[in-house]
Length: 395
Image 1 (cartoon, helix red, strand yellow):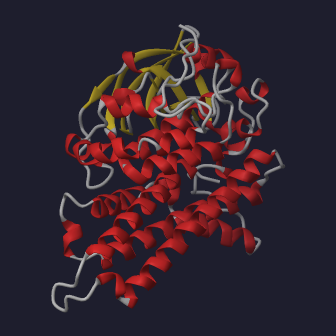
Image 2 (tube, rainbow, N blue to C red):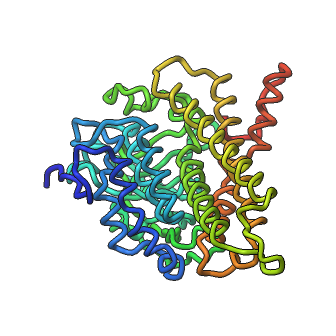
C-alpha cells in the first residue's frame, strides 16, 4: 500500500497545526471518557492521524511532509489544549518518526513501506534481554510506559547488547507490535487516557538493521543521518530531548488557563457574591501563569530553532538545551499549580477540565528526562570548569 493522504476535517492546504486546532471540540468531548477508559478511543486515533500529525517529520521520499520539529510542536500544543492524553500520545506519534529516521535505511523502508502514517510507540528503558541470532538478536523482556502502544503499528524497545570487551551497548530495537504482547496495566493519577501499558516480548527476532545505537544518537552520528540530510536527524540527542514532553504540557496549560478564565468570568464568590474575575489576586495569577507558559514555549522554540538550523551543536549546547527544556517544564508546572490553587473547590470535581489538566501536567513533570536538578547540576559544573557528573546518563 502506498502513501495515503491525511483525512483532516479542514482543507489540506491548511497547516497540520490548523487541522489539529479544528479537532478541539471532538477531543474535548472525548477527554473525560478517555480518562475513564484509560486509553484513547479509535475515533480520536483516526482523527489525530487524519490531521497529518504522524507524517509531520517523515521524509518526503517516504511520502511524509518533511517538516521540522517546530511544526510538530505546533500541532502537539493545539491537540493538548483539548486533551492532555491525546496530546501526549500524539506527541510521541509525531516525534517517533524522527527517531526512525535515525535508524539504518532498511529499517525505515520496513516501517514506511505502508505509507507515512505508521504509528510508533516506544519504551526507552534498556531492560530487554538479548541473545545473538542469525543476522540479529532474539529479544525478550517486559517494558513499562509504552504510551499509545495498543493503537500503534511498531514499537521501539530499549535493550543492552552484550559486548566481548567493555560495558554493554545500549540500543533501541524496532519491533512490529503484532510480535509482542500488550498487558493492560495502565492505572495512573495523571495522563490517565494514554494507555501507557506494559509490553512483553518473548524471543522476538530483530534483524541487525532494526537496532539503533544510543551512543550514536547522543553524539549526532546515527546511520540514518547519511540518507536523511535534514539537520534534525544529526542533532545530538540532548539538544532536542524532552521537547515532545514539554510540548504537551504547554498546550495543556493553555487549555487549563482558558477554562480557568471562563470559570472566573461566570462565577461569583460563595460568601461575598462578588464577581471572581474582579479579584486582584485572580488577575495577577492569570498574568503570572500566562507569562510562565509563554516563556517556557520560547525556551523550547529556541532549542528547536538551533537544531533545525544545522549549526554545530557541541557539549556546551547540549548541556544548555537540556537545562532550558527541563526548566521550561518547571515553569509550566508552576503556572498550572497556581491556577489550580486559585480555581476553588469546584475544580476538584472529575468533571472539571482544570483538575484533569493539572494532573496531566504534574504527571509529565515526573519524567526522568525533565529532571531540572540533574540538568542544572551539569550546567553548573560546566560553568565552574568541572567535569560533568559521570553517573548522569543524559548529556
